[in-house]
Length: 262
Image (cartoon, rainbow, N blue to C red; front, side, top):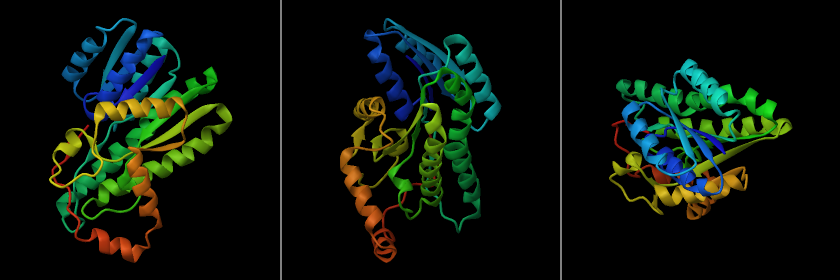
């Protein structure tokens, strides 16, 4: 199995790398690990490769850099062939308030990394997947993309864009036997959520999330909310009329305006 993961140095991406490496007992697995921090990637690759049948290649890069991802994709394909699975897990989060001009940079960063970074991740692999006649693209969205949250305008907007982008991409790939899955996490215990000072319902450990992720992706689910309890919350969020939603969220606790990266 051939897998390419962005955001692999921490959080969900790191948990997924570990989880997929543990599936190698049945067959060899080749993993491309992409993230900004080379030293962390090197340690992760060494750890994963202590398991038999696991081979890793690291790609220190920023997903904002489309040329870097293009180079990484070409290198990965040259080494191993078209990937079976590409996971766009890189993302950033922080609280934002539109009234503060200094938050403009955070709005820009979240759109560039969370949305365009996903496009940059998938784009250079699609031609090889089409030639191979198969492939699977998986993007990490968020429950925050279902309805706008107070103090999280940039993050909510970026994840709403991700959800709709992946839906469009899924329609585009239907004729080419390339699956597209939208994973919608609730609260997952990662460095991104560790800074939150408010109660996080149904908080799930990243390792448990990764196990659920692998199961749902293997089943080629189109859209999946993890954990399942948040799926019920998502359905209710979609049904609430705007006036009622406004009343519920106007005094809700807000995320810190300090940026957290994955």
